[in-house]
Image: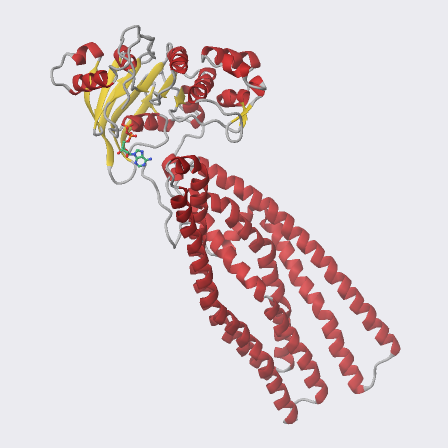
Length: 611
Ligand code: ADP
C-alpha cells in the first residue's frame, strides 16, 4: 500500500464543520453536554431576571407606586435569580467539563486504535508530527473548544436573543436598529472566521512539522554529534520554529484589525440604539422612563456579545484543531479480518505475483516464490534490491499493490492480526528496547510467560549470563534512560524475545554490524537456536548462512534473478549468484575462522561478508 500523505483542506468524512464534528467526538456524552449548554443558556436567562426587575422598578418609580413589600419582593427575587444563576453555572460547568474530558479521553483512545490499524507506511511517512500533534495539542484545543468555547457561545447569545425578541413586541423600530447592528457584524465575523481558520490550519501543520523535527533532533542527537552536525540540525529545527513565529505574526497582523473592526461594528450598535431611543423620545414616541428602560436593555444586548470576544479565537482554533484531527482519522486503515474465518494449513510462506511500491517507484515486480515450511530461505542481492521489502510484506507492515502473500495457503489479508502475530516473529537489525526491565523486554511478545520460560529463552539466546551480571539482573531497566547494553547484547535480548514467542515463521534481517568475536559467536549460536525447525526467511549477509540455506533467492532490482541452492547456483558461470558469492568471499577474505552458521551449517570457513 502506498503511503498516504495528509491531504490539505478540504478533508474527508470525519470533519463536517466544527459543531457537528464536536458532537461526533462527544459520542455518547453529547446528550449530557447539550444539557450543560442548555443550562448555560438558562444561566444567562437568570442573569436577565434582575434586569427585568430593575426595568419594572424603574417603571413603578416613574408612576410613584412602589410599595415597601414590593421592594422586599424584588430584592428576594433578585437574590433567588442570582442563586439560580450560580447553581446553573455550577451544574453547567460540571456537565460540560467532565463530559468533555471523558469524551476527549475516549476519542484519544479511538485515534490511537485507528493509528494502530494504519499501514506502517502511513505512520512512518511525514505524518508522524501530525499524529503526535493531533494527540497532544489538537485534542487539548478541541477540548477547550467543547468545554469552554461552545457553552460560552450559547451563553452569550441567549440573553441578547431574548431581549431582542422582547423588544420586537415592545418597540419594533428599536428592535430593528439593534438587529441591523448585529447583522452587519455577521458577514465580518464569517469573513474573519474563514481567514483565521485557514491560517490556523497552516499554523497547526507547522507546529506538527516542528514537533516532528524536534523529536528527530533529540533522537538523532548522537549521530548529529558524531558527525559534528548539531548546529546544522538545530538550525533546521530553528527554521521550523521561525516559520511558526512567522505564521503567528501573520495571524496577528492580518486578523487583529478585522477582529477589532467586527467587535467595533457590533459595539457601534450601542450609540445607534441610543440615537434611535433619544430620537424617539424627543419625537414623543416614548416617554423618558421607557427610554431609560430601553437604554438598560440595550446594554444587556451588546455586553455579552462583546464579552464573547476572547472566546472567539478559541472557537476558531478549536475548529481548526478538529479539522486536523479529522485528517488523521480519515487516513485509510489497513483492512483486516475481525474474526478468524480460516486457519493457515502449515507454515509455508508464499509470494504470488507480488508487485509493490512504497510510493511511486515500483520496488518489487511480479515476485513469486515459496518458502517451504521448516526450511531456510536466504534472500540475497545488492543493497536496495528489495530484500527487506519482502520481509516487510510478509509481516504485513505494508500490503502488496498486486498479488498476494500467503501463509499456509491463506492470503494474510484474510487473517486477523492475532492470527498473523501468532505465526510470525521478526528479528530486526536495529533492536528496539522498550524503557522497561530486561524481563519485560523479553516477555514483550508473551506477557504471560513465567520466569522460568523467560530465563530459558534468555539462556538459549546466550543472554542469561550477561543479564545476571547486570546490577539488578532481569529487573534492570533498559531502553531509553536504562542500562547501556552493547550491540551484541541488545541483539541477543531481541533474539530471546523472539525465542520466547516461539512462532513457527521467523523473519530475520541478519545483523550486518560487526561485533567483537565473542559477541559475534554468541549471536550466531543464539540465532541458530532461534531458527531450528522454523520456516525462516532471512535477509542474509553472512556466507555460512547463505551457503547452508535450503533455498537462495537472488534479488536484483525487485525481481528474482536466480533461485536455487548454493550448489546449484555457484556453478552457473557468470551468474549473478556466483559473482555475488565471489565478491563477498573476496571482501571477507581478511578474516578467517570457521564458526557455526545461522541455519545450522557446518560448512564455510570464509566469514562475514557484509554489503
Ligand atoms: P534491500 O533490503 O535489498 O537493501 P529494501 O527492500 O530496503 O532493499 O529497499 C528497496 C527499495 O525500496 C530501495 O530503493 C529503498 O530506497 C526503497 N524503500 C525502502 N523502504 C522504503 C520506505 N519506507 N519508503 C520508501 N521507499 C523505501
